[in-house]
Amino acid sequence: MANVGLSLNDSVQDMLMLFNGEWPQEWLSKYPLFHNINLPMIHNGTDQIHWRTNEGVLFTYSTTCVWDSIRPTGNNISWFSVVWFSQCIPRHAFLLWLVMGERLKTHDKMKPWETHSSMSLICPFCKNCPDSHDHLFFDCPFAAGVWARCRSFLDVPLGSHWKDVVRVISPVASRNCVNLVVTKVMFAATIYFVWQERNNRIFKKSHRTEVKLFEDIYATVRLKLLSITFKNSPKVDRVKNRWRL
Ligand SMILES: [Zn+2]
Image 1 (cartoon, rainbow, N blue to C red):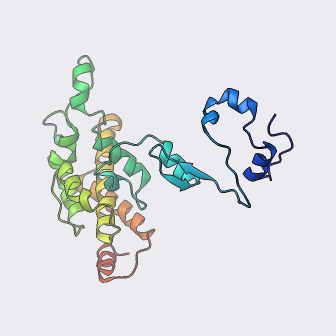
Image 2 (image 1 turned 120 degrees about the vertical axis):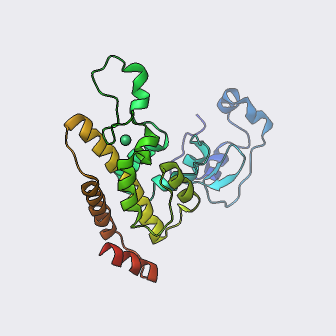
Protein backbone atom coordinates (compact mmCIF):
# COMPACT_ATOMS: atom_id res chain seq x y z
CA MET A 1 0.00 0.00 0.00
CA ALA A 2 1.23 3.48 -0.86
CA ASN A 3 0.24 4.99 2.45
CA VAL A 4 2.28 2.61 4.61
CA GLY A 5 4.28 4.67 7.08
CA LEU A 6 1.96 7.73 7.02
CA SER A 7 0.19 9.15 10.04
CA LEU A 8 -2.67 11.63 10.39
CA ASN A 9 -0.16 14.37 11.18
CA ASP A 10 1.75 13.92 7.91
CA SER A 11 1.30 16.40 5.09
CA VAL A 12 0.68 15.88 1.39
CA GLN A 13 4.38 16.61 0.87
CA ASP A 14 5.26 13.72 3.22
CA MET A 15 3.01 11.41 1.18
CA LEU A 16 4.50 12.46 -2.16
CA MET A 17 8.03 11.81 -0.87
CA LEU A 18 7.02 8.20 -0.21
CA PHE A 19 5.99 7.79 -3.87
CA ASN A 20 9.60 8.12 -5.13
CA GLY A 21 8.62 10.21 -8.12
CA GLU A 22 5.76 8.15 -9.56
CA TRP A 23 2.13 7.41 -8.77
CA PRO A 24 1.58 4.11 -6.95
CA GLN A 25 0.60 1.26 -9.31
CA GLU A 26 -2.52 0.60 -7.22
CA TRP A 27 -3.74 4.16 -7.84
CA LEU A 28 -2.94 3.99 -11.57
CA SER A 29 -4.90 0.76 -12.04
CA LYS A 30 -7.84 2.04 -10.02
CA TYR A 31 -7.86 5.61 -11.42
CA PRO A 32 -6.31 5.63 -14.95
CA LEU A 33 -6.73 9.42 -14.96
CA PHE A 34 -3.46 9.64 -12.98
CA HIS A 35 -1.56 8.53 -16.12
CA ASN A 36 -2.29 12.03 -17.52
CA ILE A 37 -1.28 13.94 -14.40
CA ASN A 38 2.32 14.62 -13.46
CA LEU A 39 3.21 13.93 -9.87
CA PRO A 40 3.37 17.39 -8.25
CA MET A 41 6.54 18.51 -6.52
CA ILE A 42 5.95 20.35 -3.26
CA HIS A 43 8.70 22.01 -1.26
CA ASN A 44 8.07 23.36 2.23
CA GLY A 45 4.36 23.60 1.63
CA THR A 46 1.76 23.57 4.40
CA ASP A 47 -1.48 21.71 3.72
CA GLN A 48 -4.64 23.69 3.05
CA ILE A 49 -8.07 22.20 2.41
CA HIS A 50 -10.20 23.65 -0.39
CA TRP A 51 -13.47 22.74 -2.06
CA ARG A 52 -14.15 23.16 -5.77
CA THR A 53 -17.81 23.54 -6.72
CA ASN A 54 -19.41 22.02 -9.81
CA GLU A 55 -19.02 25.47 -11.41
CA GLY A 56 -15.27 25.32 -10.79
CA VAL A 57 -15.16 27.94 -8.05
CA LEU A 58 -12.53 27.21 -5.39
CA PHE A 59 -13.36 27.93 -1.73
CA THR A 60 -11.44 27.50 1.49
CA TYR A 61 -13.12 24.41 2.89
CA SER A 62 -16.02 24.85 5.30
CA THR A 63 -19.06 22.68 5.91
CA THR A 64 -21.23 25.71 5.00
CA CYS A 65 -19.69 26.11 1.55
CA VAL A 66 -19.79 22.36 0.89
CA TRP A 67 -23.46 22.13 1.94
CA ASP A 68 -24.33 25.17 -0.20
CA SER A 69 -22.63 23.62 -3.24
CA ILE A 70 -24.24 20.16 -2.98
CA ARG A 71 -27.74 20.90 -1.62
CA PRO A 72 -30.66 21.12 -4.03
CA THR A 73 -31.76 24.72 -4.55
CA GLY A 74 -34.98 26.12 -5.98
CA ASN A 75 -36.08 29.53 -7.17
CA ASN A 76 -36.18 32.40 -4.68
CA ILE A 77 -39.60 32.70 -3.06
CA SER A 78 -40.77 36.32 -3.06
CA TRP A 79 -42.85 35.93 0.11
CA PHE A 80 -40.24 33.98 2.11
CA SER A 81 -39.53 36.81 4.57
CA VAL A 82 -43.24 37.48 5.08
CA VAL A 83 -43.52 34.03 6.67
CA TRP A 84 -40.10 33.27 8.10
CA PHE A 85 -38.20 35.88 10.13
CA SER A 86 -36.28 35.77 13.41
CA GLN A 87 -39.09 37.31 15.49
CA CYS A 88 -41.88 35.12 14.07
CA ILE A 89 -44.08 32.90 16.24
CA PRO A 90 -43.18 29.46 14.82
CA ARG A 91 -46.65 27.87 14.95
CA HIS A 92 -48.13 30.97 13.28
CA ALA A 93 -45.39 30.96 10.64
CA PHE A 94 -45.99 27.28 9.88
CA LEU A 95 -49.71 27.82 9.36
CA LEU A 96 -49.06 30.90 7.21
CA TRP A 97 -46.65 28.81 5.13
CA LEU A 98 -49.46 26.31 4.52
CA VAL A 99 -51.79 29.16 3.59
CA MET A 100 -49.24 30.52 1.09
CA GLY A 101 -49.47 27.20 -0.74
CA GLU A 102 -53.26 27.09 -0.17
CA ARG A 103 -52.82 23.74 1.52
CA LEU A 104 -55.39 24.00 4.30
CA LYS A 105 -58.29 21.56 3.99
CA THR A 106 -60.92 24.18 3.37
CA HIS A 107 -64.47 23.34 2.23
CA ASP A 108 -63.81 24.11 -1.43
CA LYS A 109 -61.15 21.38 -1.45
CA MET A 110 -63.22 18.88 0.51
CA LYS A 111 -66.37 19.28 -1.54
CA PRO A 112 -65.43 16.94 -4.43
CA TRP A 113 -64.69 13.99 -2.14
CA GLU A 114 -67.00 14.63 0.84
CA THR A 115 -70.33 14.33 -0.91
CA HIS A 116 -71.59 11.69 1.53
CA SER A 117 -70.24 13.33 4.65
CA SER A 118 -72.64 14.50 7.31
CA MET A 119 -70.37 17.51 7.81
CA SER A 120 -71.93 20.77 6.77
CA LEU A 121 -69.69 22.42 4.18
CA ILE A 122 -70.61 25.95 4.97
CA CYS A 123 -68.56 28.77 6.46
CA PRO A 124 -69.01 28.58 10.25
CA PHE A 125 -68.75 32.37 10.51
CA CYS A 126 -71.18 33.82 7.98
CA LYS A 127 -72.97 30.58 6.95
CA ASN A 128 -73.28 31.91 3.42
CA CYS A 129 -71.06 29.58 1.39
CA PRO A 130 -68.36 26.90 1.72
CA ASP A 131 -65.17 28.37 3.07
CA SER A 132 -61.92 28.65 1.14
CA HIS A 133 -58.57 30.39 1.61
CA ASP A 134 -59.85 33.52 -0.09
CA HIS A 135 -63.11 33.50 1.86
CA LEU A 136 -61.52 32.98 5.27
CA PHE A 137 -58.64 35.44 4.69
CA PHE A 138 -60.52 37.82 4.62
CA ASP A 139 -63.53 37.98 2.31
CA CYS A 140 -65.83 36.58 4.99
CA PRO A 141 -67.47 39.49 6.87
CA PHE A 142 -66.54 38.02 10.27
CA ALA A 143 -62.87 37.51 9.35
CA ALA A 144 -62.79 40.88 7.58
CA GLY A 145 -64.02 42.50 10.80
CA VAL A 146 -61.28 40.84 12.83
CA TRP A 147 -58.60 41.84 10.32
CA ALA A 148 -59.91 45.44 10.20
CA ARG A 149 -59.49 45.71 13.99
CA CYS A 150 -55.97 44.22 13.76
CA ARG A 151 -55.04 46.45 10.84
CA SER A 152 -55.92 49.58 12.81
CA PHE A 153 -52.90 48.83 15.04
CA LEU A 154 -50.45 48.79 12.12
CA ASP A 155 -48.59 51.70 10.53
CA VAL A 156 -48.16 49.91 7.18
CA PRO A 157 -51.05 50.52 4.73
CA LEU A 158 -52.44 47.09 3.80
CA GLY A 159 -55.26 45.68 1.75
CA SER A 160 -58.15 43.69 3.11
CA HIS A 161 -57.42 40.46 1.19
CA TRP A 162 -54.60 38.17 2.33
CA LYS A 163 -53.02 38.04 -1.13
CA ASP A 164 -52.97 41.85 -1.27
CA VAL A 165 -51.27 41.95 2.12
CA VAL A 166 -48.59 39.51 0.96
CA ARG A 167 -48.11 41.47 -2.28
CA VAL A 168 -47.58 44.73 -0.38
CA ILE A 169 -45.24 43.31 2.28
CA SER A 170 -43.14 40.92 0.15
CA PRO A 171 -40.81 43.45 -1.55
CA VAL A 172 -39.77 44.96 1.81
CA ALA A 173 -40.33 41.99 4.12
CA SER A 174 -36.64 41.27 4.70
CA ARG A 175 -36.06 44.73 6.25
CA ASN A 176 -35.71 44.62 10.02
CA CYS A 177 -37.92 47.67 10.56
CA VAL A 178 -40.10 47.75 13.68
CA ASN A 179 -43.31 48.52 11.77
CA LEU A 180 -42.72 45.60 9.39
CA VAL A 181 -41.93 43.21 12.21
CA VAL A 182 -45.15 44.18 14.01
CA THR A 183 -47.11 43.90 10.76
CA LYS A 184 -45.77 40.43 9.96
CA VAL A 185 -46.35 39.14 13.49
CA MET A 186 -49.88 40.57 13.46
CA PHE A 187 -50.71 39.23 10.00
CA ALA A 188 -49.56 35.69 10.80
CA ALA A 189 -51.35 35.78 14.16
CA THR A 190 -54.62 36.88 12.53
CA ILE A 191 -54.41 34.07 9.96
CA TYR A 192 -53.67 31.59 12.75
CA PHE A 193 -56.49 32.69 15.05
CA VAL A 194 -59.09 32.89 12.29
CA TRP A 195 -58.23 29.33 11.24
CA GLN A 196 -58.23 28.19 14.87
CA GLU A 197 -61.65 29.81 15.47
CA ARG A 198 -63.01 28.26 12.28
CA ASN A 199 -61.93 24.80 13.50
CA ASN A 200 -63.19 25.42 17.03
CA ARG A 201 -66.63 26.31 15.70
CA ILE A 202 -66.77 23.28 13.41
CA PHE A 203 -65.25 20.62 15.63
CA LYS A 204 -65.59 21.87 19.23
CA LYS A 205 -68.77 23.90 18.91
CA SER A 206 -67.07 26.73 20.83
CA HIS A 207 -67.60 30.30 19.76
CA ARG A 208 -65.70 33.56 20.21
CA THR A 209 -67.07 36.90 19.11
CA GLU A 210 -65.23 39.15 16.67
CA VAL A 211 -64.15 41.38 19.56
CA LYS A 212 -62.97 38.44 21.71
CA LEU A 213 -60.99 36.96 18.83
CA PHE A 214 -59.34 40.32 18.20
CA GLU A 215 -58.51 40.64 21.91
CA ASP A 216 -56.85 37.20 21.87
CA ILE A 217 -54.80 38.16 18.80
CA TYR A 218 -53.85 41.50 20.35
CA ALA A 219 -52.76 39.86 23.61
CA THR A 220 -50.67 37.25 21.76
CA VAL A 221 -48.96 39.81 19.53
CA ARG A 222 -48.32 42.15 22.47
CA LEU A 223 -46.74 39.32 24.46
CA LYS A 224 -44.47 38.56 21.51
CA LEU A 225 -43.50 42.23 21.12
CA LEU A 226 -42.60 42.38 24.82
CA SER A 227 -40.02 39.65 24.20
CA ILE A 228 -38.32 41.53 21.34
CA THR A 229 -35.54 44.06 21.96
CA PHE A 230 -35.87 47.03 19.62
CA LYS A 231 -33.27 49.77 19.23
CA ASN A 232 -34.56 53.10 20.52
CA SER A 233 -35.94 55.41 17.85
CA PRO A 234 -39.01 57.65 17.40
CA LYS A 235 -40.68 54.82 15.42
CA VAL A 236 -40.03 52.33 18.19
CA ASP A 237 -41.36 54.82 20.78
CA ARG A 238 -44.60 55.15 18.80
CA VAL A 239 -44.97 51.37 18.62
CA LYS A 240 -44.27 51.05 22.35
CA ASN A 241 -46.90 53.67 23.19
CA ARG A 242 -49.50 52.13 20.91
CA TRP A 243 -48.95 48.63 22.29
CA ARG A 244 -48.35 49.75 25.89
CA LEU A 245 -44.96 47.98 25.96
ZN1 LIG B 1 -67.85 33.29 5.96
